[in-house]
Length: 63
Image (cartoon, rainbow, N blue to C red; front, side, top):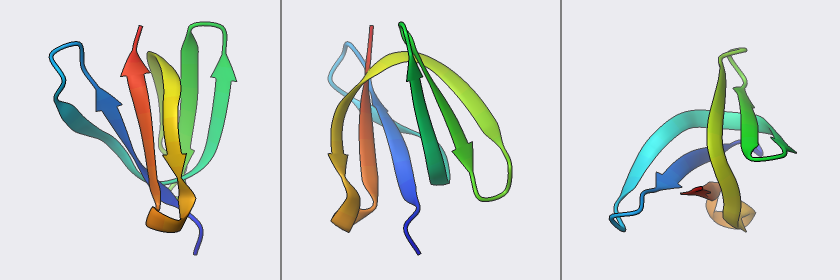
């Protein structure tokens, strides 16, 4: 499997889990659309900070 868990790094430096088993990440302007293998979708006002796909981990940073 090649899904990843997506975390949001807040301005306070803490990370929180946004969505698990994400297989689609679509950046668009100031937002990032996430969709997982269960067809759940979330849009987050953030930018991609780090993608560690071997670790199945994507970190977004609040704008």
